[in-house]
Length: 294
Image: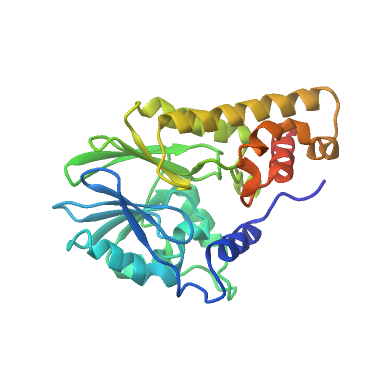
């Protein structure tokens, strides 16, 4: 059995596909208004959510450390208030790389219990452990509410989905959902089995998000452009179709290599471009087989 893609390969992909040879210098942070008070920032790495208002700035994820100055500059064009809170949707470096910098800017970092644990135990590039300033100060097990800028933001944990520490956030008045990496718009998702992710949990996370929203909800995915409920439902249909197809192969006694090499299992979604990203059709078939076989 071939190993499932480890985190360092994922991060290598993100670097090579989002950045050119000049590194982060040429990355531009684009601000997209989602509602009256909520914005999506797009740069390199996971999509950032930003809430602005009288109470201060509330941020969801922070991409890579070298981009913090650009992210801060983009935020200052939206609000002159300080950054008060930062929620990490999970522990991967393209969503938490700027934590230490955000802490220095005054942000209180919040995340699921497992995010803090993984950040504590995953070494930095120089092999030193993550600094204390990069760790979440407030952690939660199941869900919590943050009352800021005139609305309640519901934060809830999706168990064993993309990782074991995923959080989705719903802005109850703005009607905006930030999914973190439990949603890759128009692409096959990265399900990090080595970090507690699973196919069943990932599907459950999407169902949880869909139960929370309505036809008018704006969705900030972990990766991809701003989305809506119909596109989110299409993503769920893809996941469930592939799950049923791979389970049928497993029940028929097919091996991992049989499934990985069976292009017919994903051809419908391959033709729609789902395999054009980091997780191609072969990788998603392998991930589904390994997760569902276990």
